[in-house]
Image 1 (cartoon, one colour):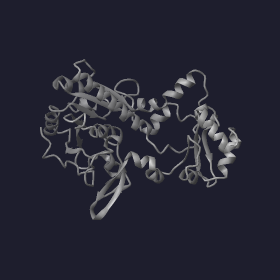
Image 2 (cartoon, rainbow, N blue to C red):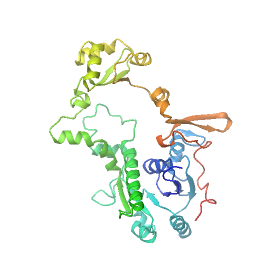
Image 3 (cartoon, rainbow, N blue to C red):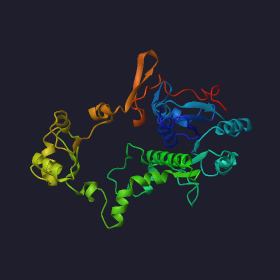
Length: 351
C-alpha cells in the first residue's frame, strides 16, 4: 500500500502545473478527481501533438485519475462539488485570485465548512500583492527571476521551469499540511503557491552568489561557463559534450584526456572526437557526458534503468512511450489511452 492511500485530492486546475502536482500525489497513492468544465474540458486536451485525439502531454499528466465534468457556474454542479469535497482531504485550484469567491467557493468558507480540507491555490503571482491579477506563463515567470538576463539565444528553454517548480512546491506544501494534521499540529489550510516562486527556486543558488558579488552571467560565472572544466564543448560531429568536472579527481581525468584544463585545450580535444561514440565505448572522462537529444535521452541506459518512461498502448496495436514520475516507476500502468473522456467517472465518483 502506498503512503497516501485513502487520501482524496480534488483537482480544479488546468494545463501543466496543477495536473503535475496532483499526478505526483496520485503516484504516491492518493485518489485524484479531476474536475473539468464541459464539454471541452481542460484546454490542454487540444494542445498538439495529439495522440488518439488528445494531447500527448495531457495523457502523461492525467494517468490514473478520475474524471468528473462540472460547470461551476451552475448551482447544481457546485452542490455536487461540495458533496465531493465533504469527503476530500485536499483541493488544488488554479484560478485567478478572486474567481473561487465569485463562484461561491471561497477557500476560507470551504475550510471552515470542511474540517479536514486543505486548499492549495496555484496562481502566477500569488493570491495577494500588486501583481496578483496579472496573467502569465512559464517563460514570463522565468524572465522575472533574472535567470534569462543575457541569455545566449532568443529561444525559450525546452523545459518548463516555473510550472514544474510550482508543482513541486504545491506537493511539498500539501504533504506538510497532511503531516501536520496527522501529528495533531495546527497548519495553514489555505496554501498560496505562486508559479513565480517555483521559478525562483531554480534561481536560488545564483541569486545567493550574485548578491555576494559573483558574476553569474553566461560565460562568466563559475557555473555558467566561466570555469573551463564546467561548460559545454562542440565535438567532431558538431554536437556537444557537457563537462561538469569540479572535484580534483574528475578535473585531473579531464586534464589527462584533453592535455590540459584550459578552454583551448579542452575545446581542441573534443573537436577531434565524437562525444557520443566515446560515451558508448565508456571512454569519456568522469563527469563528462554527451548532450543527448530527447529521443536519445529516452534510450540512455541510465534513464532506462530508472523506469521513467512507459508505453501507453493504443487501439490497433499502436503505442507511444510517455514520461512517468519516479513514484510510478514500479507500478502497473493502466491500459491506454490514459486520458479518458471529460466526465468519464461522473457516475462512479462517490459523494
